[in-house]
Structures are given as structure tokens and as C-alpha cells.
Length: 312
Ligand SMILES: [Ca+2]
Ligand SMILES: [Ca+2]
Ligand SMILES: [Ca+2]
Image (cartoon, rainbow, N blue to C red):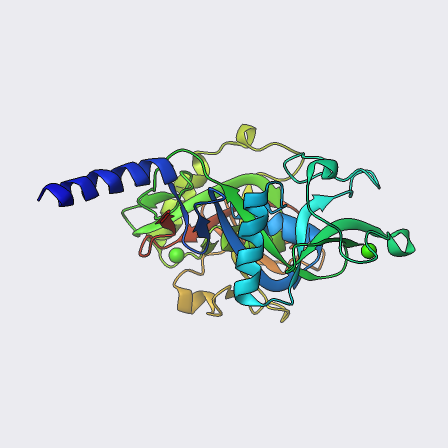
């Protein structure tokens, strides 16, 4: 009895000290941080963006502990890996800093053989190999990468199963929604929802249209910054490259999804190229330009938890 009580207190303390983060990340108690290796290669810019959308940063071996954490996760997957770090000189050539702003000169990691060489004067991004050595590479090549999130104090897990408090459960549909006020084009909006563990919202009923209309109403134009249209937001449907054949991002026709109420005169493919889907503030659908940034709504199921406790 006594020892189980101790165990209980220990668990409580650990939860408090170590906190929680996404379950697709692994916790390293030595580095006191969460790591995720992304094996699908991306260029440096996309790697940075994806980590940031996931609530993390592109990892740099700032301390011996973080270096060990990065090598550990690399060697467990593929010892041959060379990954992008967050250390770059993309703002001013030759001025290398990590995403967090640490200068490369403060990073105590050796260079690989014959590196750095700034080959053809186009190498402004720093990689790390499985032996723990750095190299400079073009930011445009594609490589795997590691996202990293330093431990912070206890983060509350919402009823949506996320550490992101902006996701709110609506009991009418039993789904969680988040409206993004920072405008993105359709592709980047898709990425943002996906990185948060959800998808661009799909309206499956009149009730859900009402839910989204009410959510949108909580964000008047003044809550959006920038010069773009604020009377509609992207939703999860587009024409998949086949004009007029609108389907959801899950491949269903709008009829199959359960809601086909377009605003009067829409879809109209006005000035051809309106291949993506959105919703006016009225809750009625429109076709819009995929490349014009707009606000957007993400949806996710509360069913499984995206938040894990750190296990030391
Ligand atoms: Ca090089
Ligand atoms: Ca839905
Ligand atoms: Ca239109």
C-alpha cells in the first residue's frame, strides 16, 4: 500500500515535471525534449515549416544532450541517414544560426571530412550525419529531418486530445474545430490541419454547417490580419484536377459527404481556376482560387489522444 502510494506520487510529479506532447514524438529525458524523425525527405524550407506547424522546431545539436538525442533517433532508424538541422544561413549567406537563434560558432560538433566547402557557392543549410558530423548542403536538396520540442512546464491536454487549446469540441457533432486566422493557400492550409492531427473541415450535415457558421462568426474581419478576403474560409473539398467534380479531401462527392448547399451563383469558376472549396460566413459553399491565401477551418476527431505523457 505504502509503495503504491509512493508510485502514485511519483507519477503525479513526473506528469507535472515532464509534461505532455504529441504521441508521434519520443521523449528523451537526457535532452529533456521531444524528438520526431521525419523519414520522407523534404527541402529545408518545407522541413522547417512542417516542424513549426507541428508545434516544434527543426532540430539543431545545440547541446551534447540534444546531439545525443538526434543521433539516437537517427541510428535507430537508419545509420546512413543525413538529416537537415535547423541551422541555416538562408537570411544572409554565411551567417549561420539555428531556428532558435543560436550561432553556429556555439555548436560544438565536428565537421565531416572535406566539409564545410560551400560547393558552387549554394550551400546555406547544415546537415548532421549518423556519426555526429556536420556538413553544409544546398537548402534545395531533399533530406530527412528531425523535429524537436524542448520540455516545458505542464501543458493541459484538451478534450480534443491535443496540446493546442484552440481546438474546441462541439457536442452537436462530437468533432473538434479550429479556425486559422493566419491566411494560407489551400495547399498550405491542408498541411497546417494535417500537421495538427486533423484535416480541412468537411461539412457532413446541416448541423455541422451551423456549427462552422457560428465558429466563423466568432472571428469578425478585424481578427484577421492582412489584405485578403475575410468573407470566406477554405474547407476540405476541391476538384482533384477534374473541373466541376468537387470532392472532399477524403474522396467523397459532396452529396456523399452530406452537404451540397452552394451560395447563389456558386460554383461559378469565376475567372477560371477556382478549383478549391470554401464556405462563406453564411455557411454556404463556394469555389475559390486555391492559390489565394484565406482563413481556413480544421476538423479533428476527439476519439484518440494526440497528447502523450513523457516517460523518463
Ligand atoms: Ca558542403
Ligand atoms: Ca465533418
Ligand atoms: Ca466561385
